[in-house]
Length: 94
Image (tube, rainbow, N blue to C red; front, side, top):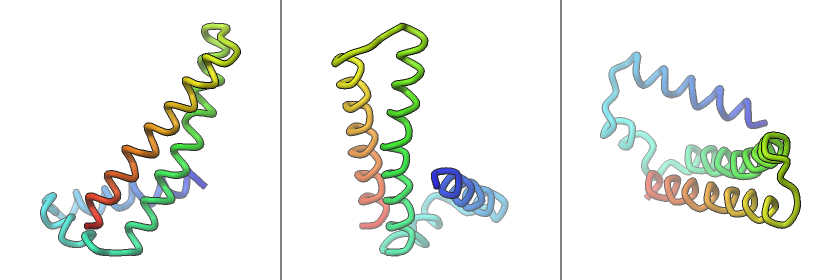
């Protein structure tokens, strides 16, 4: 699912760049659009779940880190990603 969000996002970025859209023009098209807000909210949710899972594996295998400290670190990472991501979605939507 995350791959679909990434592909749509990249296609949107490529479209914007190829058509010479400025940041103001992009915000003009996305601001207040419930569809884009929903898309990016789901994107943020997918990242906030997926990234900590991968991070846990990397930290565990690279540093032989196990236990509560690892779990709290990846949980905090997921929460931070969600908070920052949803804040960005809100800022673009409003």
